[in-house]
Image (cartoon, rainbow, N blue to C red; front, side, top):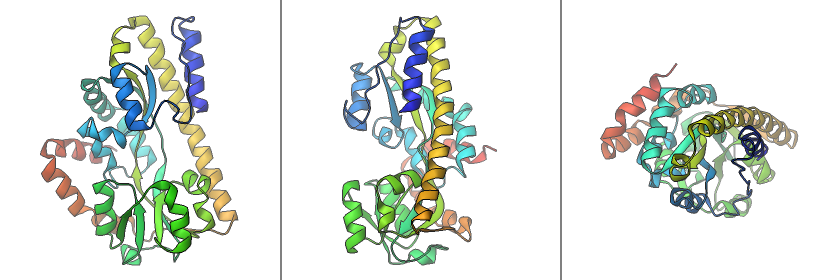
Length: 287
């Protein structure tokens, strides 16, 4: 939110008031899928979107929801700030969306009410809430758990009553949702690192002068850099807060064991999307 306000202020100043973005926080313009469609229609000029919900519109972005597609945050930054990010930008533009810069939404890991997860075997038979996405259902199932799609608002009570044993999310969401009050084990797998974008409606972008396009893009890149720094600080503070409350945080013993378990997930995805295999391999090859 702070970075987006900075973006709006920088754009207004740089363009001498020719463009004055107004920030509407908290999803007041609609949930992400609805807001994305509004942006494509030009009803919303600029938006901050996670790539997860974008897959229904731009199939290539489903690659970003593959478990362990990025080794870590730095790998994601290098990929999205380079040629890989441009390929996603090109795909988005075909759908009427212009991506100006890439931001963070955290690294997701597993947490539960029972025990530390050190290896995939520790997940055997445990019920984990996942987002309603077949990739995430497959991910948990391949790790030996029982995937349980569920609305996010139901997770706290379901953890508390034992309807589920665990869930997965980043430190900041784990803390802000208060899930740490009932799930005292957080195991760092970093299995999902899904970027977000500052995006502009193509119809709006095409009507913008070349001079202002450059100024807006510069402001978006600066906002992304600020957001990444703020996110890292927030993540660190959330980690410390949950640890201070008694949550046991552990690194997994062998991350490769979790990654190797995803081979069937990738095989199924590539079988359904053979045209995206080269994109997957190119992301994995980024050093």
